[in-house]
Length: 209
Length: 134
Image 1 (cartoon, rainbow over the protein chains, first blue to last red):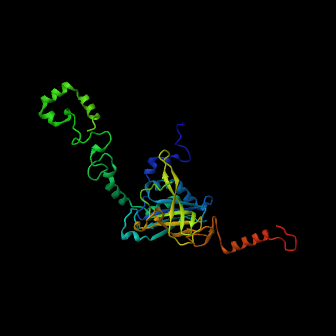
Image 2 (cartoon, helix red, strand yellow):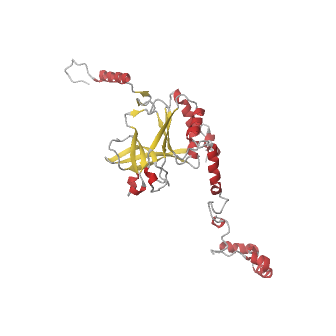
Image 3 (cartoon, rainbow over the protein chains, first blue to last red):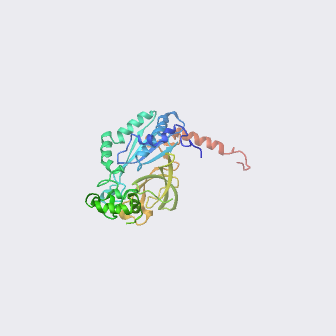
């Protein structure tokens, strides 16, 4: 296996998770499709080509539900267009789903540099910084796998692979139970003569319940 | 090649692949999927069947799909309908300026006329000869 196989190609740090995570454009939930029209050779669309080279992967990474389509050599002028629609992607049989009208917003990119394109897209269609912070705070509890409880990924830590099971379902070994370590210390010593603590733990893991 | 996407998006752009009858079309849609190892995006082709449509689309058009509300769909065929033709095959209209274009150039009136004249000169034989020639 060739070892440094992944850092190949032009500007390979574009393909690192750290770079993809640091994308700044997160589209507002209205945006559904992001279309890029450009030509491959003409110097007019040079800015758009650079924008695609650097930033398209970031955009697609941060917005997995937006379809990014590239049309190459279709029209002589480069432009970018957004297809907006208010209906959500969930299967809701509500009246709001019938309001399925979409709008198209075009943005001209003729002889613009990639930074200008990036900034104007971010200002027009991207979530503002404040909104991004609000969203990240709302989902922080959910995203962090170390959190458990009400709004988190798992309700109880017993659901995670490798953690102890719920003591309501599977009785803990005696040396880990407060009943024995605080009150019934004599019985604990008796038990420890028969089985050591480590063996009791191993028995605990082997038991199905 | 089943549609493995959990939430079907409500708007999609795709290209018409085949038309089995005048009302059903199979549309190929490209979505970019992140490859885990390379952290690069590759186009994944998904074919959707779109049902009710105006019978104007040809094979090769680029088309906007709209999702129909789930109440009316009985088969996976009917989930999407074709709502608008974005780029018609051979008659691409630049949406910014409204002029027809052919890839890298606009099809303005004079240009098209010149092209037609050149084609006619090349194809038609000199009219005097009686023998059939190319």
